[in-house]
Image 1 (spheres, rainbow, N blue to C red):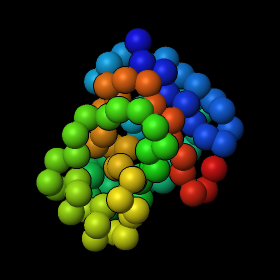
Image 2 (cartoon, rainbow, N blue to C red):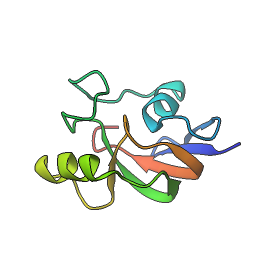
Image 3 (cartoon, rainbow, N blue to C red):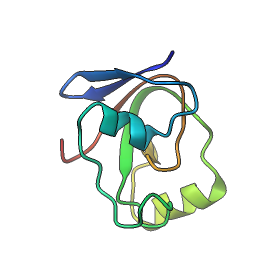
Amino acid sequence: MPVVTCEPSGRRVVVAPGTRLLEAVRAAGLPVGMSCDGEGICGKCGLLLLRGTLSPAAPAERRVAEANGLPADARLSCQARVTGDVAVRATYW
């Protein structure tokens, strides 16, 4: 089972493969910004991927991330699915 680590707090949560990153971070007790209810259109749930593996980003996710000025190593947590151990960070934690 993959482990999601949230930096810099170090909070960790074990999730089933395929769990949305958004759900994993919330299970770790941390907030995730969003205004589109997880539809992948606002870009506010972007998290920096520090290490590990997530599902490949779909073209629509890449477009939203780019349009919202997210760094290249950021993923929309409402779209990315956990496929292995990962560490992530938000700018507001």
